[in-house]
Image (cartoon, rainbow, N blue to C red):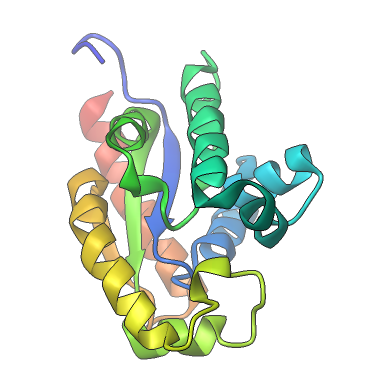
Length: 184
């Protein structure tokens, strides 16, 4: 992006599964009235099947290709800004995706400790990467891989374990306003 182009006024939520991206996205949508783009939901709608079914049929690689394709589409949709974009937890795995995320607007990394992630995702069967004998070890391994990438793309990191979603949304909005005002 060249210096003369203003940063799109989107708020992009990244973070591990169960960190609160969808819930915080809904709260931001309610407050701002901006359209909410939940990337996992869009992929499920377009594929006509659940994420576990996509993983079963196309593997993680197939799902990640769908994710990158959608991210390209969102990024290249000229004039479309002022959206809340909730991403999938593994979107930061690709270098192309990390570059696209930085172009989209203000990127917020929602984080939470492993015990909180386990509690939030434990009963959800829609998490194919956690269908293992030791979900806590899987979470730790994936966090170790992804956290440096979240850090690379994020303008703000928030721990979602100690605040309610209303408080998180308030903090994000205050920081986003400052960010956009300094780049206009």
